[in-house]
Amino acid sequence: MNVERLLKDAAAAETREVTRESLPPLTLPAARRRRPAGRWLVPVAAALTMIAVAAVTVTLRGALRGPDALGEHEGPPYFLATHRKGGVGVFDSWTGRVIADIWPRAGHYAALTVSADRRTAFLADETGPCRTRIDKVTLRRDGTVASRTTLPGGFGTRVEEMAATADGGRVALVFNNLTGCRGDDMAVVESPSGASRGWRLPPPSADSLGYVQSPAWAADGRTLFFATDFFATDAPESPPGENPGFLLREFDTRTAGTSLVHARAALRSVANLSSFRPSPDGRTITAIEENTGDHGTLRSVAIVELTLPLRDGSRKAPVRELARMTARQIAPAAPVDFRTALDATGRHLLVSSRHDRAVFRMDDGRFRRLPDMHRTDLGLIAW
Image: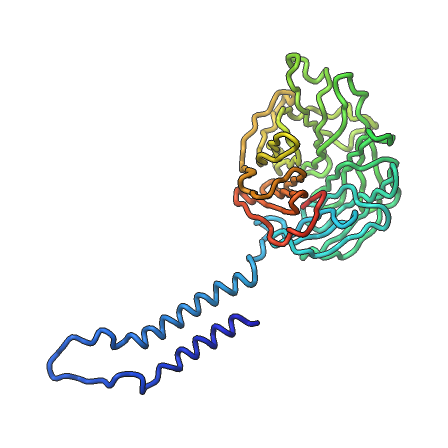
């Protein structure tokens, strides 16, 4: 049904009732008298009707069409998420509409990332116990799939997290070797050729698991940030019983050797941070801070900024809050199983509540719920 056409027809019908015969005869008295109050009511009413119809038409057209498409400065136009038995979907980041489905050739996708130019996605296909292949997917501007290839070679361990450079030329992989797999702790893959290099952490102390998490590329495409638990030697000044938090390290991937021992301490924090996004000038780090209660229930999630120290990166970095989204804002959803992700700029946040099949986004403090996600069960998300 064309609502705009119906409104125009109704306005035309209303106007047709105003005929010459329906108007009272014009009488010019000899003496000047007060004009009748209702003389112009009919034509004025008709004009006001036309104006109202036009306004309602514009409003309804906007409601029927949906919100205007986001520009590049207003956040990514789409995001990726695992769903439907291990596949990955491409979703419109404003409406939640499914744009494309990407199915693994074997196994299931266990990790994913998207380049900052939003044209290249990398998907870790877990084809068996301790066996992973990397798929490279080229996306068009509208989020549809232009091509998909599998990078040569593979890995004998499980991929936990991934991070792509801004142009999609390189992808960093963080591995999970705590489930019986054996291999490197981190690797970098050249996406055109599939060539890769791997590194390992030094043996952990008795007080630390010593694993790599939250990889993030600097703007130069060769410096890689990643977080680790503190080793005992990293925080000798910490009093007994205090949570030492994590250490964000900075690593030049051109460094010779296969050890991450030379990764420089960039900053430390006791906050529960993830999804690190270095600024283009390398002076600050934007991240997600999650505040959860018992049983993993979300209380709030915030976008925060940390200033990178100029020299001593082992000291605690102050945290400045940029925007916060509370559990009350997403009521009645109860996200006891949720995922969060920042885009490459660090200004746009996604929160996926798997329990309620709901997705929320926050853009520079503005908050909204995606309308078409209530029937979709999402897992990992990236945009």
